[in-house]
Length: 477
Image (cartoon, rainbow, N blue to C red; front, side):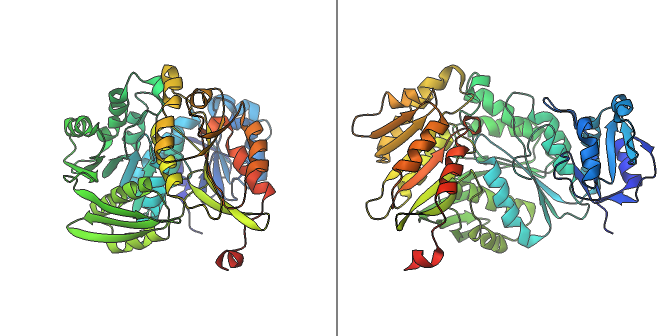
């Protein structure tokens, strides 16, 4: 049996008190009793809404090899006889285990933050580094106060490359996370007005993102977007934090890792980039210029982490967009098909503009339309109505003639779109889903874009439920 953690190492890392006949080790770490695998350790974390201790018996029923529980909750666990490690605080124990995992590995660590593109860039790094060695990376968007230590705790000792996404909604949240991760390369994808309701301005957002530099190991690297207006601020912040090497990526002629050209296609595109003294031509498996821009950053990070660039290029060629982050579906209707682009996971003004550009470059067929299905951008604070109305400019510049809107703040966009744009507005995602099911036509390209909390993923789900996938064979005829 190959253990992720031997029990002696686990007990030592947690500074815990063992109870019962503990196994020799555990094969994994879980905080979710519903999907724990047999042989894993269940950490009974108390969250804002639920307490993992209430689900300890379910974790045992699903195969948990041992439980990590709080001393104060021990009496409430009743007659459970499963082996346990008792600690003062379970979340802190998970942090301690994550730090122990970081201490024991010789992996090269890359950490990614930014207002837009963190998860996509993290997945691109996973793909690009995998041909160079074993890669351990965050699952989904595990980028917060429990996601980062959980990802660290799950990292095998023999990992060659670790890739970590680090997120924040408020100042001060990145600092403790990057102190655990201690990256060799810290990347900031871009600074944009995300979570603007929690910050005064873009420079305050940049200052919060710049906390990532504080955890960079001695001799490490910062990788910054040269095209972003906050570049100079971030460069100074990295130097002030003692980062030895500050690098840049982007289309700017002075960028060290430079985007030379991008030729888009419906399913991807061709990227030309200058990396490490070479001019590279990289076929992209996912479409969009914003994806190509982040791909240049990924190639730069691979170079800085000592990965194989040629193999990384091949990895990017096979990449596909994630669910909710640009994944495409071709769905059958009335003897033809339409294209659905799922961007329903998150939204802010910068990512909205990137998605509108993606729709602009998409190719309808026959009499098909380009349709923007847009929901509210959350956490915009007092700026919300202004930034929603501001989407009219990129929509008109892209020539998008059909716009379907949902949510209270999207009414501001509805009110400024000219009569020449075929606009549909509904109060809720569910009402807009009903319209979309009836109004979509063969040949159309729909992109669904919103913040996660608006429920626009239900529009995607409704379309996928009603319309089957268009057969590959028929597409080619």
